Image (cartoon, rainbow, N blue to C red; front, side):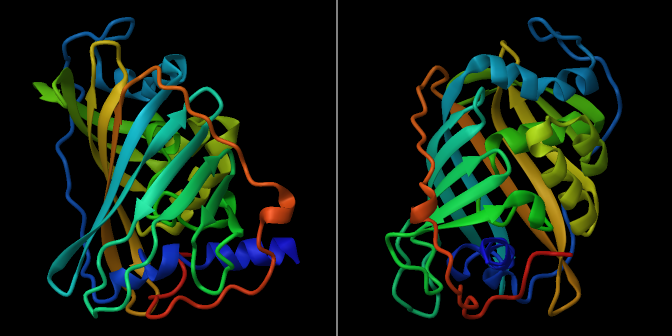
Length: 293
């Protein structure tokens, strides 16, 4: 029963949010230039952009914890919709906590309460999920069972999973120096391959990224990433493309992760088994269907 409910939960998206908002979307993601041009060196790393980016996830693990802000953008009916999240992440334990806020409903329906999301190796936990789930219960989603690998499903991309996508960097260029949140950073632009990322990923994310490589419309992930002088990701913007099952059209989603206040202690306590909902989860009203796959 629990496995069936996990599968069922994985076929819905945060509170009639991400997938429901994709109805009517057109195809396409932003492309980016490529080449292995040499860049300024990053402390402790090769100056080759591809080599630097492939080890960015390892650098985050050494950094411990940080605060994180996320946004997920898509266009619907000519309007750009953004889902935002804020919280903390522990890169050593691969645990995070985000409060995700859905955009205002254009139909005037009552605003959905912020959703609490806990990110863990192989799992996503959501509270205030809606869709018939009691307010005091959590929904657990097995990320390897979601056809987008939970890069899109929760309305926020797990920060460490986002970094591990960079392990599949195929081409990259160094754009130049700039600042993010007042911190001096190096800006890189490139394209990663989800299949290659899955093969190089940690055991915790391997299955999820492999699912995304098969489930998205393309395994190519264009990105822009900004690293500080310690090689830590400060900002990462990635473009994903999946197929809207009702319209058979490619849908473009841009996911942005900001990391700051490194050294922050991330206190994340996962739900007890008795706090996880095992009942029926209603279809999201207006949802465009399950994630791709």
